Length: 256
Ligand SMILES: *[C@@H]1O[C@H](CO)[C@@H](O)[C@H](O)[C@H]1NC(C)=O
Ligand SMILES: *[C@@H]1O[C@H](CO)[C@@H](O)[C@H](O)[C@H]1NC(C)=O
Ligand SMILES: *[C@@H]1O[C@H](CO)[C@@H](O)[C@H](O)[C@H]1NC(C)=O
Ligand SMILES: *[C@@H]1O[C@H](CO)[C@@H](O)[C@H](O)[C@H]1NC(C)=O
Ligand SMILES: CC(=O)N[C@H]1CO[C@H](CO)[C@@H](O)[C@@H]1O
Image (cartoon, rainbow, N blue to C red; front, side, top):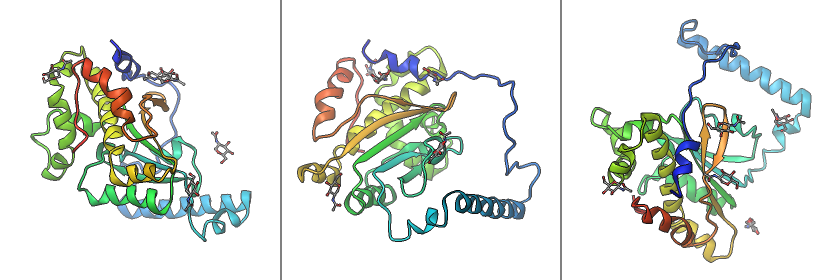
């Protein structure tokens, strides 16, 4: 099957680590709330001083005139998927939007304003829509009944995606495979949806470059995985990537 590679490639494998992971600065058992803020203020002071020591005051002042990032990153809010950290990005490089399950929900002014601002005002040339293995929002979308209304509403498009492909997903052998597959299918859905947004198609109509990528971050080992559903012109997703999915009996809407 054409897309069966997606299933095994994204598998969750839980590996017990023998080495000692650096202790969290904000470990809940040792700090009260006030200490957390003291900690971030003092950690920030060290970070700012170290950057000035290494690169000079221009490390900060060179950015005062404005930003000119090339990349819009859309990812999950999950604390274990910190995009600037895993991309080793520095100031001015990445315009970032993170929310529950790296969603783009039509009619949500938060996400839409980020996308419109990035495209129209910042002129970014690349969008990276990035899911991740072990995504709690995607997992919850398969059984959303007990969730708070705000969350249930926000992830409803993923619930619909699951329901539309339920018998396929349910037939996968393990929970980890079901979730991993839905994470990947959801990113594909979002690449398709993004490629139909007005500000996106307008940019293409003007002949400006814009490439939209679908990626998955693997929490197991910190690597980014390209789903190879890259689009750089109008209609490309439907031409290249949707037909083989449809032929397999998988489907999703570009409309929610
Ligand atoms: C992160 O990027 C900086 C340059 O911005 C580089 O000096 C550093 O080696 C990079 N870190 C890693 C782990 O690659
Ligand atoms: C926007 O970026 C493209 C390259 O990605 C460049 O050709 C164009 O001149 C830029 N437009 C503005 C207004 O900066
Ligand atoms: C990370 O994990 C994936 C599968 O879980 C594997 O295919 C990939 O090679 C791993 N990469 C590294 C650098 O360990
Ligand atoms: C995407 O393409 C790269 C490079 O050709 C390949 O290594 C990777 O396995 C592909 N990913 C999927 C999901 O097919
Ligand atoms: C390929 C496949 O099994 N597709 C299924 C996705 O789920 C829906 C709803 O359960 C089925 O109708 C499809 O056949």
